[in-house]
Length: 147
View (cartoon, rainbow, N blue to C red):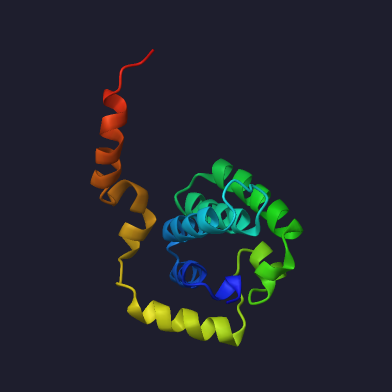
């Protein structure tokens, strides 16, 4: 399977299309950790940073958005062409996701399966999501004695 046809990449594109840039970041990070953990110059890091930049821009964090966008563009410009077989690199560098018909049809099908979220939730997702599992997982670590 081509890496841009992997379900997590399709999810990234679906969330991008819906404007859910926080979720784009989450699914791309999961895919990156599977595919190229630790490789900070991998194309997926550029995709992750681009989504984070768009999320920050929407929330008014212009400085953070610009910093992430600059880094994302550098990575994406130098990334392996395999991650641009189904996505137009030049359009992506302009923050637009232009896909081949094959990927677009998979993304459209995935969008139909996703729950509909309101704009307020999408914009403030990181503050509104349920983090109880993350907090619970960190509790045992906090209880460990320090040296």
